[in-house]
Length: 420
Image 1: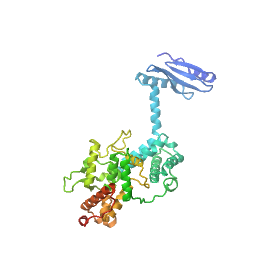
Image 2: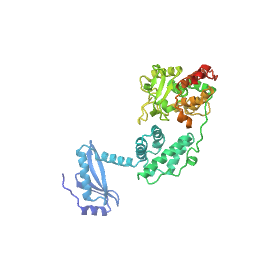
Image 3: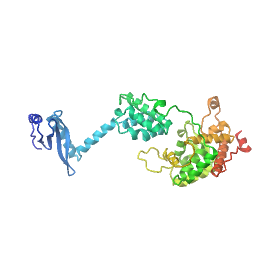
Image 4: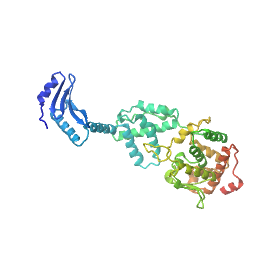
């Protein structure tokens, strides 16, 4: 190692001189002064055949002695075949990420969602990945302002008011978590209200598709070239099985007995961990539904899911078809019908079950609902046989509607007798 050349006095004089200087202390350490008042310590070195200048700190904030220590630490990295500049950038990025809004979101999700074992962790995960992180993830958590929150809500509330309300609720919780953990000093969403700033007061939806609307929808889905047979079957299964979208898209073939090898016949055994009520449900499968599922098995080409993932997902949010994939595909169908959502298909099925003469308690169990009040406390019957009769009649009606024969025929006397 070459002997150091600079002294504290020489450095002080160079700083006060008012001239541009470049003074060497040996082994690549320089005092660099390019402006009248500013001076900095810089390490000059070569790495991978290229010359680099690494700023260690400013003088007089960093003394000569401290600059030599910093330079020595950088040389140790070079001895380990590590570029000090790259190491510093990585450290700065890690430090920045620790205080980022993205880091706050991930900490909240781990502590408040995963660690508590919430039943549907995919719901808040979806709001993080789809709305919050793409818009605010690069900001420092402490830099997020009420204006930033308002901008994200404004982009959503016009087309999806309910989603905007949910987004506001999750945003509040994330920042409240940050305040409790002393990660941020305030909650920029604290003063927002759903009525004034998000989707407004929510009212129960009442949209249900009639037989003629379903007929148009089936026709337009078939005529839309890029809609796809698996998407068409997904819509038909949502209607025929009366299940929620997440329950269907997350279904594995291991849950199904398509051959009816037990006395229950063909059945889908939906586990308690995947239902909203927290109770398992055996769903009888009509012959038409079994046929659709066999078609999906061929299309799935060996996947464990009835609706496999279609493209690589860097975030690996779900291992099956994305939760929004069907929504996006349906938006491309020029059906011309008044607006409806996929969840409205459950209301559509319930409405048609009533028109078919299905008893209220049977229809409610077809949708996987718990019976309410005293009735729900004492009536623990699962109405499996009755549900099979009802769902078979409903699947038959769907086939008629798809063929353009949209007559609503009530259950036959023999089927009604099975419900008694």
